[in-house]
Each structure stands twice: as C-alpha cells, then as structure tokens.
Image (cartoon, rainbow, N blue to C red; front, side, top):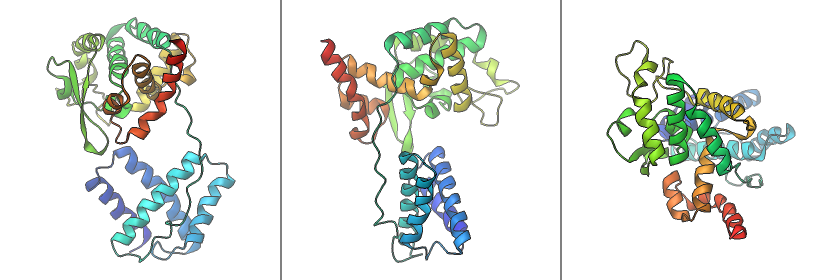
Length: 291
C-alpha cells in the first residue's frame, strides 16, 4: 500500500477510535499531505523513510521561518502517524522517536478587559432585526460559557430546547461537560429563539441552534468570526484583538480575576489537563496587585 493509503487508514483510526474533532482530522490531513508530497519527490515510502530524511523535511519549515508552534504541530502529526504505522506492523521502528520538538515560548493569550466586553455586548444588543438577536445570543453565550467557537456554531438545538439554566456541551474527544448559563445569556437566547426560523430558509426544521442556508447547515465559525470583527469596529475596538477565541480567553481570565478556582475553570473550558488552563493564571498577579 502507498503512503496515501496508510494516511487514509490513520485518519479513519483517529476519527473512529480516538474521537478526534473534524478540525483536528483536517490538520492531520494537511500535514500528512505535505509530507506525502515530500516523500514522493524522494521516491521513498512511509515504511522506509529515515530519521534524517524526516529531520530534513522539518528543517525546510525552519528555513522558511515557520512559527515554532506550526513546526511543533507538524512533528506531532508525524509522530502520531508513525506510531500508528508501528502499531499496525507496517514498519518495525518509529523514526520520529529521537527527534526533539522545537523550542517555543508559550505566549500569553490576548484578553479583552471587562469594559471592552461590555462595549461589545452593548453594541450587539443594539443591532436591529433577527441578525442582531442572533448576534447578541451568540456573544452572550460565548462570554457566559467559554465555549470553543466550533462548539458554539454547531450547538444542537436540543442542548437548550428546554428552559434550562445550563448547557450540555459535547466537546473534544466527544466528551460532555455541564456549563451554567448567566441570566443575560438566558434572556438573549430566549429572544433569539423567537426569530430562529428566519435563518432556516425553506427548511421546515433544523437540528442546529444557529441554522444557516449553507452547506454545513449551521453558521460557520469563519462567518461568525467575520461578524465579530465588524462588531468590534462598530464598537470602536481594535478588530485585530477581537475573535471568538479571545472571548473564550476573556471568560476564563475574568472568572479567575474575580475569585474562581483554577480547577473549576478547567472543567468549564473542557481542558483535559489543568496545565493548559494554567496559562490564565497571569491574571491572578494583576488581581493581587490591585488588592
């Protein structure tokens, strides 16, 4: 079997056995596709590529000034892939085992102040018509829950069809978590539900909370990102500093700054490892200074 065939088997395994998210699968596919092209030029198979050849491939990225985080992700993709080849008996050894990960500093997340978030929310609530109600509901949900943008846009309607004060979110690895809703989020959601059918077009119904006429059946994360940028400009904020992920950072940082404990924030964000959540503890230093 050629490398493309091995790649297909690997992606199927990641989806079926590990429950990898669609975006994760897409990233693996891109990384391995580029690696596939490199091996074709060398006329080398995945079952015989050497450690030095993989190092040479990765060094191409450093010559093009690829970000350390991107280089680390590519190496991670190759490691997962070659471990799979070894586990399947396709090759006897893992050539990536002795390759060191690129050193990378861990940048602090961009965080909006509480005043900045208030400006965004006020502007969203002032937007007219069904589009305004949808935007206000999405923004209130995002800031109240810290959802990943992919979780937000693909949220099933059943997750909040009843008058609950919490959401059941299915996140990475198909894991469920319970996230409480704030009173403003509940009110914004109720107002949006009255116009939700407007976004279905000719469809009689949709399983999505935020339906769309597009191929995905729901508003895409790219489109929501664009809408958020326009809102930031209208609110007088720097649009380069505003994104769905920045609002997720704001949710976590503002909770910690107001006394929430790290373990609770970890559960709300859906982080598997608390070390991922610890990046937000920089806000605690600011809180201590102010106290």
